[in-house]
Length: 180
Image (cartoon, rainbow, N blue to C red; front, side, top):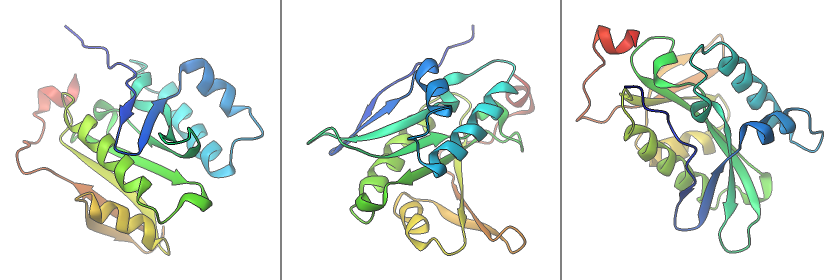
């Protein structure tokens, strides 16, 4: 029996992490007020979702980060794939995020990444987390480091660092799990 992954609002000490509904996601793709960074990420998410024949929307939707104290949106965060659509078929879920400039350096993204990783790692077929950081973005690397990620690879050609979080109590997916 297949389990549908629900759209769940996550909460941290200072944040509410709210997934966009399908309609809101599609609307934001065509909204000129959405930042260029967020729009690029959402377009990539949409393309990945279109090619996932199971349409696992909960894995592909953008999530907005709201401060609890005043409801201000301070950024966004997303899973960039479902564990079943990991290109290497290992059950790794990629995470991506963006903080609006005026809210950077205040620990919000560390809270959000921690919460998103905890939720993803509690789901079936998730073996670990992965993230890419462009060279010259030490703040993003620091967020991942604080959340237990380790830099495992670097591409000079792409100017990209690869970070992974592989909890010790996880076993790699079997071939059967990778196929399903």
